[in-house]
Amino acid sequence: MRTATLGSALFFCSAQAFASSSIAPGLSYDSSNGYHVVVANLDSSQVDVRVAMPFPTARENLLTVAQWAKSESAYVAINANYFGGPQNFPCGAARGHGVQHPAIYAEAGNCVTTLGWARAKGAVFNSAGHEADPKYASQYTELATGGGLLLQNGQRRDWNHVKLEERRGCTAVGISADRRKLIFVVTDNRACTGKGLQDVLLANGAADAIHLDGGGSSKMWIRGKGYVNNEREDRRPSVAIVARPGAGACAGIWTCDPSSLRQRVRCLNGVTTKQACLGGCLPNPRGATCVPGCPSGDGLYCGNNGIPGDPGTLYSCSQGAVVGSTKCPKKCVYMPAGIEDRCQ
Image 1 (cartoon, rainbow, N blue to C red):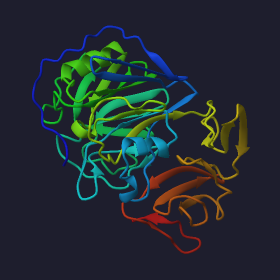
Image 2 (image 1 turned 60 degrees about the horizontal axis):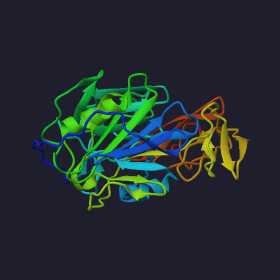
Image 3 (image 1 turned 45 degrees about the vertical axis):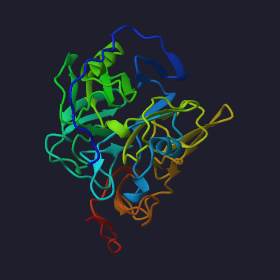
């Protein structure tokens, strides 16, 4: 696994209130003492904060942070889970847009601390044994797993000294006590300390936080700025966290309307258009698609077997609309007419 070991250091980042600049509605950025911080307003309809939606194959998920940002038309992107294995599989649970990452591996003690969130909710919890389980913590559409806790209930926690490598680049993500803000932190390549991360997270309103992959993986990309921290390496993390235009922003691409399962919305040249989706709306970073309907009634369908979608994903239809999806661990099996498709 290409991750770092830890030591201790004396670099200090004061917990003062930093002057910040706006990246986009609902997003602010500041940097101080080698710490780069983005605060996202989860209540804003102008911004959508997600784990990047996984592609069907491991090879397709080998993207740099900048490439993940481009694939999601994002304002901001950072690396997320640790990675290793034969094709940079994420270590621990990963979920984006409600879709479980297609290929993961487990590592006891190091890849079990997960931050899950959805609009107006979030928590940090232990996901050991549930890395590939799409039903675990299903109230959260987004899951990112890191090396250990930094903050819990507003209190500092001793971090995982095996995985947080001080005096190199490091990355962290936190959520406020009222679950209305998500805070991203990435450091310059010699700035990181565990205490410094805690100071910055607390100063920007985080109550619960975890540290993510470090060293050459620690990158933050911002639209119009490029990479803002000075880490020289540019690895290809299999999972990234992105802040992208929301349904209320002029995104230029179709997104699913959060207020309706049967509608998608697009803002183009300042004009917002909504379109009814008879069979529901399927999220996609390249533009949400409308499902024409469930051809054989309610039940379970593999993607591209009667409804559009990823052929390795099992979609659930209810009352003629797609209401949920599960990424199959191996493949999605097409069944004869009259029998529901299933995962293998």
